Image 1 (cartoon, rainbow, N blue to C red):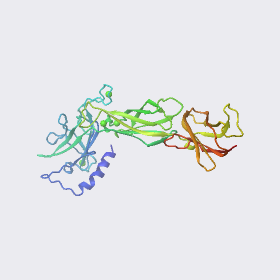
Image 2: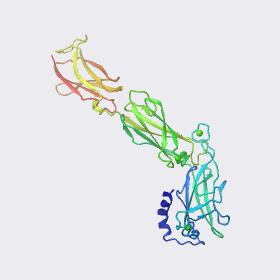
Image 3: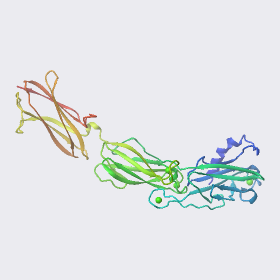
Image 4: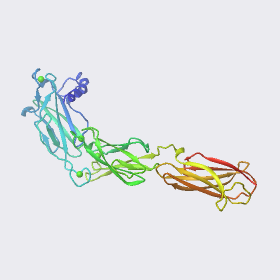
Length: 393
Ligand SMILES: [Ca+2]
Ligand SMILES: [Ca+2]
Ligand SMILES: [Ca+2]
Ligand SMILES: [Ca+2]
């Protein structure tokens, strides 16, 4: 409670240093801590009324007497008289707060109403006021006989926002998801919760995580998740394979016009997850060997013999890896005379033999090169390329 008047004093001091009340012109020394409120916000109000500081040694209060009452109202409901109290014995600045209680509404689509609308209280801090979605609250104070000061502030719902803390994650990192929807700050005096659905390409049903409001009255909700490549999704742990896109979403049932109160909108976002292993180290490629059609090792080569070129790749990661293995044969002039490839997937912690046959038609020296890529489209190498030369008789 001590902090609030201080904030207002900082806010007010430049305004009132110069301003002189002129009751014949619009003069409204009533201030609110926000220019727009959501339906269940806390509203902090201040009225500058030095002439109501009747005792320089006592905390004065205003608004409670019938002739000069303060009224806080919407078109449907009102709190009156409502008492404001002086911030200090001799400040002439009066404050109060109320909590908006919205109207009966189901904010998460589970069929149950999540609000407790009520209008009660007489100030300075015990007030609750029912409000509609697109309305306004008006604070009025009969400052002097026949002089009524008023201030109106709109009340609106908002379309929520959701985002991951990064666009790209490595698979060993933690991801934060943040939702901003002040309409879901249902209780401005406690931390509210918001369930968020998270999924990945490899786990489309995914997980539901509990996002918690960052402070009692922030309307911002945060959850964190970790990734796993070899366990199933559970709690805040999501099964994700490197290369996946991950998705986060919730349904906003508190939408501004032109939506109606029965509409809802899926608020969603995505990010990418890549392996924490550098791409060139994801697979290991062993030196190629040669064999004949019966599988026996070849040490010399003749024209028109079928040569089986055999490579081995190793996946020491704890998740399966897609790959393209490409063979390329070049002659003495460095011209490519044969290219072939195979595409596949290698399981975690497994070796895989890959082979390709080639029949040389001319004698000479040939160079056989092999490449291991992630795909034929992006062609990022997953291991170093290898080459080996042979002489064909
Ligand atoms: Ca006083
Ligand atoms: Ca509900
Ligand atoms: Ca809250
Ligand atoms: Ca909303």
